[in-house]
Length: 103
Image (cartoon, rainbow, N blue to C red; front, side):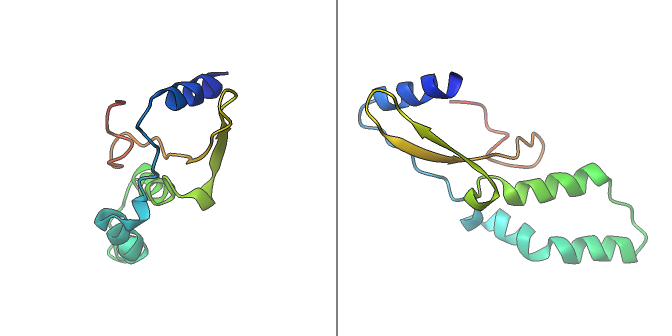
């Protein structure tokens, strides 16, 4: 029900369109994706403990906003417009997209 209302509200706003923010193209995402495993291996090798919730947060960040990691398809009952919206990580400490207040 809530998703239906959100889709209708989004369709009611004229002149605005939804565009996926493509997090995989950001410098931060590319840096984390390119170096996370190396960083974790070095932490383990040097006997530095990294809290498990920190590793989890970094891994969830890499999945945030990626359609292949999960999405919801929304259809407006009024106009028939369709949108595919990727799931977010809902991280509150690291992810720049999820730490922003709702607009």
